[in-house]
Image 1 (cartoon, rainbow, N blue to C red):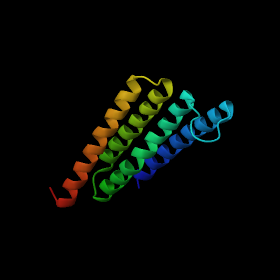
Image 2: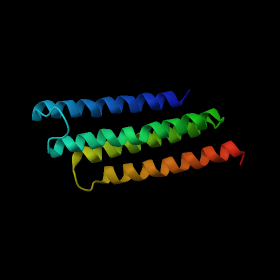
Image 3: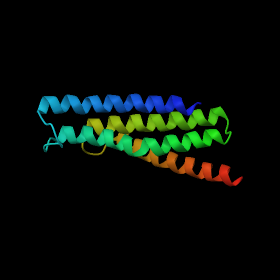
Image 4: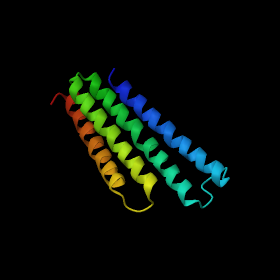
Length: 127
């Protein structure tokens, strides 16, 4: 089960992002919400963006894997998704404005979700 590797990596990234939120909350003494703290809001959104995209991507990857697609393709998709999410998290964590990591991470995520969706549909209907 190759998808398990990428689910585990995304889980570790999620933990790192979560710990960063807790650290900022303690430092800023904010127990709920973002308390108008821009840095905390950045960290919350970096975490939230992963939570919003990873579940569907991993489900798609797993289902594609179950259709019998070669392991190389699963690894390419999994690595690309994880790298996109790493880039996005780094970009979100570095600035509230535009950043290369945020842009390419978001773009890569959308492209991969599209590619995996189309591939799964094609494999399902036998194209």
